[in-house]
Structures are given as C-alpha cells and as structure tokens.
Length: 468
Image (cartoon, rainbow, N blue to C red; front, side):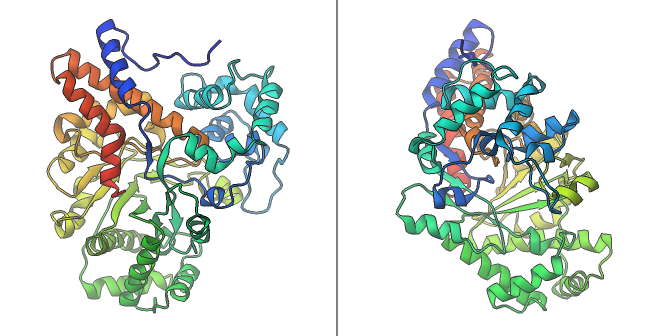
C-alpha cells in the first residue's frame, strides 16, 4: 500500500485535475534550485555516511521536534544537543521509537507529507510508520545508510539538485566549502553571507565577535568606517567561495538612514555595550540599510527574514541554544519599516532585495504593493510555519493580483533536513500547478501560458533572482 496519493494537492474537479496533472508532469523532473537553506557543507565536504536514521531525519529537523515537544516530550529525549552541556539521549533507536510512537501527531501537516515522501520515494517503505513498524523502519533505513548510494553527494545527485546554498556566519572560515571545491566533485554547493553575529548587538558575545571580525579581516572594527570595510572584505571572501547572496534575520523590518556621524556614534555605543534597547534596534535598522548599500556596490542579492520572535522560551534557549523550534511569528510593518532603505537603494539598478515574512496579513496590504512597484523587491516564498500547501496557496492568492508572478523569487526550501528537500520542492510544484489550473479553468490564463509560468515558478525565477 502506497503512503502517497499520486494526485495529492491537485484540484478535485475533473477539468482542474487534468490541467494541474499536465502542468505538474511538465515540471516534476526539472532540476532543484535550492538557493537558501541550512544544510551542512561538512556533509558534502567529507561525504561520510549519515550516522543513523534518527540523526538523519529527526534530530536536525525542528519541524519534527517542536511538535513532539508540544506534547511533552523533551528535547533531550530526542537527542537534540544541549548548549549548556546537559546530557541528552544518544541512542538512535530510542530516539526513533519515540518519534514513531508519536507519528500520529503529524496527521494533516506538511511535515507528514514530506516524511511520507521521503520514506516511500527515497527508502522504498510503504507501511505507515507507527510504534509497531518503528524497528522495521529503523533497521531498513540504517542498512540503506551504509550504502554508497546514500552518502551525501550521491543523494545530492539523486535528488536532482543543480545548486544548493548553505548559510554561514560572517565569522566562518568556510573550510568545508574550500574542501568541496578542491575535491573535484562536480556538485555545486555555495555559501551565503549571514552577518547577524556582528550586526545584532543582542547576539550573545557581540563584543567578542567584533574582535574576531577584526582579526580575520585585518580591519579596525573600533571605528565605524573600519567596521564597514570589514564587511566589504568578508563579503568578497564569501563571493570567492561561491556566495551570490546575503541573509539577515532581524526581529523587525525596520531600517534607518542615519548620517555618517550619527551612525558612527551609534556604533560606538552599541560596541561598548552601552546601547539601550531602542538604540540596539536602531543599529540593526541602520545595518540593513548599510548592507543594502554594500549590495549595490558588489552585486550580492540581499535577503531579509524578519518578523520572528526568536527563541521565545528563555528556558529552552538557556539549555539548548538557538534554532530549537521556539521561533514565533509576530506582526511586522514593511511599508514604514523598509522606507528608509528603499529611499536609498530602492531604485538602484542591479540591486535585488528578497523579502520573507511570518506575517501573512501583510501579503496583499503591504508586500505585494511594494514589490509591485519597486524594481529591487522580490517576494520570497512562504517561510517557516507557512511553508505548507495552504500557506503556499494563500500566498499565490494574496500577491498575484498585485505583484504578479514575476516579482516573486520562485521557491526555496530553507531547511536543515537534507532528505526533505525533494519532497518540499515537490509540494511547491504541485501547489503552484493547482493554482495555475484554477486560473485556466476560470478563464484568467491561457493553458499555454500556464505551462510557461509553471516552468518559471519551478526553475527560472529562483535561478535568476539569486543570480545562480
């Protein structure tokens, strides 16, 4: 018995399903462009077998462990590494059994779709995961992981990935990316410049990070001018390792356009640890504009992921650190927030700013109108909680009438869970084809145009937006 319905996510009416199916069949085998995500470059550099099914599928995926935590299962019991040295479960089979016993929690979620796709299409499993099948699953997947065909590079090629972008801190030495390049392997893995550790005064160790930033760039980060030069040098270093984009994870979309003297004075206060909460937010706002100006200089695509209250649980953050599933959406103002940046760079030729949101209420009211007029703006696909069939469909319905298709940036999976990548892209392709089929059957798009748009949404838009 198959785990997946071959017509999943397509319209139920006969005419719509026929068109969606034809559209999907035309794009389902296109290469995957994965222009933003959080897979580990070490996997591709070392090309070692994944340790066990739990470490491959459960431990790195915060979509999975946050659901289990919501039902009272501790992160330590799921093998998630602690930040404070507290002991955690290391037995992969025990972790897997806990996951399997609670697989019913994922009914109706996109995570269930991604996992069933992985189980069926990658590992050839067709019995539903449960407490009764847990050991069968574990043994089968563990055996597969010993085979060369299931090493990271082989999976990269099997998935049909044309290019994948990882995300590294501005302080990273990019040794794994160098190792990939020097290995002679033909797979294309590029990095992305993520400067939050040296642009966000609320990041733990900010002062120490600035010192490290000075050491690795040879710039005097004691002055604002020297600090900006350090970013220039570091961005160039990242470009030498394949980077075409930067990424910025800020709590708000606020930007600022201070005078040089005011910006330098503000930098001095936050660098010394004397900045108030308002001044720290103002500094983040100024640095988004400074990063935009640097992108105008060097041509790097700029992404902003804003509107997330990160590490909402102080207790979890203290014990386990960042990125443990406790990032929560909050309202975000883009019209006022982005105006200072757009006043400086919004009409600059060659500048691209890709905006992501966790606030769906702004799709039609703010983001689509902004992207529908500013030539620099592109709308990133639904992110985090909205990377789901309903979220994707709401996105298309909300933004297309104002921004069209060509002010969006295609799809990216933004994942740490490597094996979910083909499943996530497949969901996006199915949803887009279902949406296009609706336009065709309601007389708003000719069928031949729908085929062209399906190809663009699947492949061309992401590749061009990220200059890949």
